[in-house]
Length: 159
Ligand code: PNS
Image (cartoon, rainbow, N blue to C red; front, side):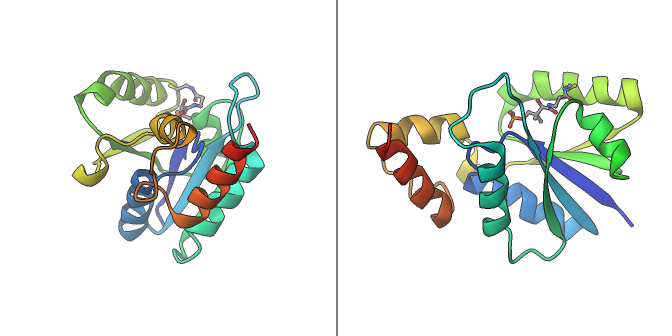
């Protein structure tokens, strides 16, 4: 049984994340979406809200579960018998840091990282850009799942 983790901040989950999660789910027995709870980093949505949104948008993927984690991803992998980390690579700009993290995780804990190329439709997409465009009235409806758009619009209206 091959269980993998797709880790990230997911603040909020975008169509790019969902594309990687659903493709990973086709290739592996189980996928855990690992939501980093990092109290030192400010986020628009709390970790619980991010988990809730991920559960909602992945509800049709039966072999996908969502969990929060603190600390090192390799410790989460050990604790949950995860075989590998799956990451999306958008462009060459992602490569250096992703490569460094993958090698560190392998060096420290023998945890493998598998890279999937992002769907070119979403190569430019990031949660940060979605928030910035949405905050200033940009139309991000085609970039995030509907429940995220709804929550994002509500949250930004309160700012
Ligand atoms: O969505 P993000 O913020 O780009 O995701 C980054 C994430 C959460 C995958 C990465 O920062 C991570 O794995 N953090 C957990 C802490 C950790 O293990 N750090 C060492 C990485 S070598």
